[in-house]
Length: 469
Ligand code: ADP
Image (cartoon, rainbow, N blue to C red; front, top):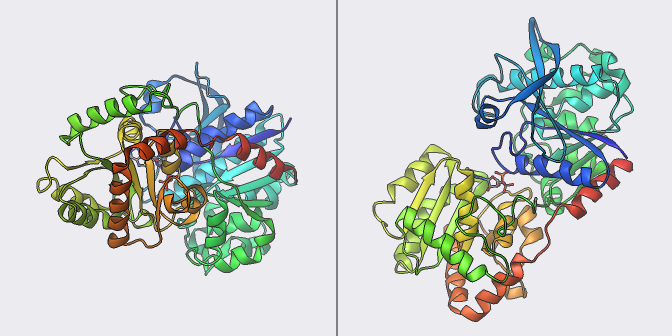
């Protein structure tokens, strides 16, 4: 039995911006089921989860950021059974805000979170066997553990760092070096990449093992990772890719409480029809036409700026033979472009700009196809949720999408294209429409894709094996 601490900025259901939350909310649960003691440490935000739950204070301590002293509390939710222990660091002044990221002082916020976390860990009676950090917001922890005298009890504790998204690195200038707890200046080089302090690079250099969330993404970032390619090449001996799983308790169409109608492999046709009818009624769409959806952050990585063109050209070129429903938020120009088209294609197209967990579940359940024209996709969870809900994914062959979706032309169950371009996406939509017309095959594929096993069971034990290396 190992004691494993996961540290992350996000964890479902406490705070979610994307896939990171789903992974950190599931992996520790599956590791606990394998007999290990798991804990998740994350910031305490002032969001829906913190308003709707009650918490007890399990520790009060101090964190220092340069000249400022912060008092922090470690909170634990009461009466929740998540399958792991959830510990939330409450730092008034920095985290008592509704959103997870995108504040001007994110550097200060996440350094203070990391200092508070390690100060608290330093006061605990037991020393963990493994500390597993996720993305750049926790990138200094492996450095603190191995190089700072005050934290020397962690010097030999295994540290794992998982890159969920290598595009965000959190760089800042050496003028803010004094934000970090004192350490020997000899180690400055560990923090440095391209003349700046780079938390992602620091983690890659300091952790015992580095993973990405799919094998293909690990291959890709050796050639394209926003300037860190050489570092990754140099550290390749400790790097590997482990494909994410999905939490099959949360993402189960037979029990999902967010659906209008639950369904299983046997009842998939009637179940999807009822959920689609709800969506079409809600968004003024035609239920007799195949429904194509997109769910995700409206950013370049997801190919989102192509969506307005895809809506316009597919609906005009294909005589409105389809419906399109989009859920997402992000780039304001893309949001505006998507909203602008609603009037023109009323009855066939609608967008919901914002974050809506229930609607996302309804869309996986009620759609016929899910579009993922991603430019970069470290793993991608949406395609796996879609498969489990009997929705065919249409994906660009990149990262985890390449590892999880096989094209119907190759005997598979999805539609794949190579370029992140409007014409490739529209060609894929045409292929999808043709496939849907072959009703017998389409229905058979639906049943088959629902049964593909993407559960965490294998990945959770792959991580345990890695911790032991
Ligand atoms: P990323 O982490 O890059 O955003 P992933 O595919 O790994 O992409 O995970 C995305 C997760 O976020 C999925 O659970 C998806 O359903 C969810 N999601 C993304 N955008 C929204 C939104 N606007 N509303 C609800 N859920 C969303």
